[in-house]
Each structure stands twice: as structure tokens, then as C-alpha cells.
Length: 171
Image (cartoon, helix red, strand yellow):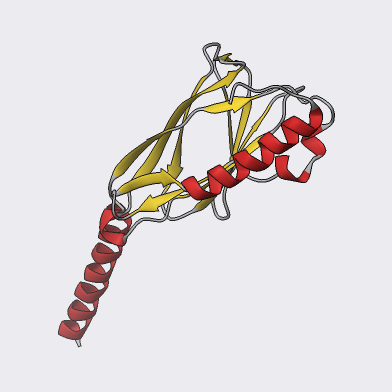
């Protein structure tokens, strides 16, 4: 009876150690860095709201030089929203799902965000409410990359809208 108790205690300890090892193996994250710009100049004071199901919401603000930095947990679908009064709000979808054997890696991802004035009610247009980019892990590169096809489609829709609103762009 005592040896049975000892064996059961050992099994419980092994199970707890195994569970603890699994938790500590998933310590990776994505460090996101970039700069917010408007008219090709740094834009301070932009609120950046970061949210994902099962993650605590986070808000950071771009610094005086327009830079921002934040970390994203792995294995989540984030929505990152850039807002500032008088400017068109922009959103990025960032999926941080990686293969299990890479869940202990600290990844870095840099991207910049260009904001512009909300003129002629542009922010109310459906094409402006869509995410401007989708970023996810690409196993071929073993890194996070944006979806260029999606980005090109959104840019095309937005450039059409600029033309309809009489806005001249440098693109």
C-alpha cells in the first residue's frame, strides 16, 4: 500500500514536470517594430490597439518620432488598429501561428504604417474599413511575411477611391 502511494506520487510528479516543460517550451513571441508616418513624416500620438481572442487587449502610442514596439504571443490571430483623430484608421491582421517546434523562438517583424487625412468622408467607404495587410508565418521563409496579393488588391481599391475623391497621390 505504501509502495502504491509512492508510485502514484512519482507519476503525479512526472506528469507535473512534463506539463511544466510544455509550458516553458512555448515562450516564443513576435516583437513588432515600426514607424507611423503621414505625408512621409513621422506621426506621433497614434493609438495602436492590439487585440486577439484569448489575449489581454493592449494599446500603445507612437512616440514623437513615430516609432512603436510591442510583443505578440504566438498561436493567436491579432487585429492591430492604428487610429488618430482626423486621420483614416487602418487595420492589420497578424496571425502568429507557428509550427509547434518553433514555439520557443523570438521572432522580429518590422512594418511601417502610412496614415493620411480623412478627407471627403473617405473613412466611411467600405474599402477603407478593410485591413490594409495580412501578415502570417511562411514556412518557406521560416518567418512572418505579408500577403502581397491581398495588399496589392487593397491598395488598388484605395487608389481608386483617392481618384474618386480627387486626391492626388505620389503612387
